Image (cartoon, rainbow, N blue to C red; front, side):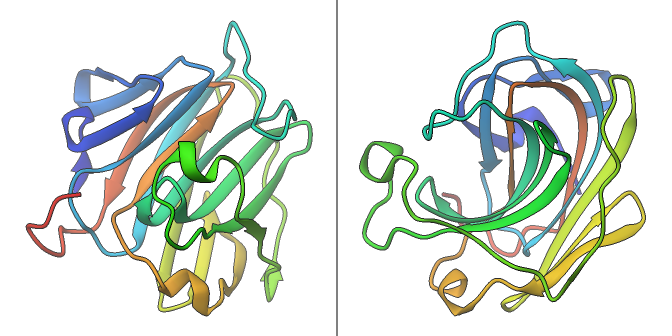
Length: 193
């Protein structure tokens, strides 16, 4: 199903809806997830429009430009990420953020991240302003596959601790202006977060 701005719980930053249910991000930090449960599969067709006018550092102090997909979003402290890093280095990184018993950013901050090594991987294209790309991530149990455009760029197991929590899919960006068409699987229940 195509995701509209009204389908998202925006926890940081802002998302504007453009005609055709396209989503526009202009904030240095954006975090959002669907307001209903879905299978762990999400696809974004996005145009990278360059850096935001002002920039925000990550909790670690690092300045990074990136766009990514969230899977199994229980809350801000427990989820799986597939991040397309734009700068300072172009690459795809899969991370599990796990903080059992913690549920808000105030509780876990930037703790609990673990980058996962793939069984196999490939390069992602360098993103240039105005380029249109696709990022798709899907999980089957602990096994995860990530595609950039039509190429498989990451495949592996995120480990059993990623199955200790569950929830819908979402998106995240840092210091990147974007226009996005977001697609998610059919809702798996009427439960909302």
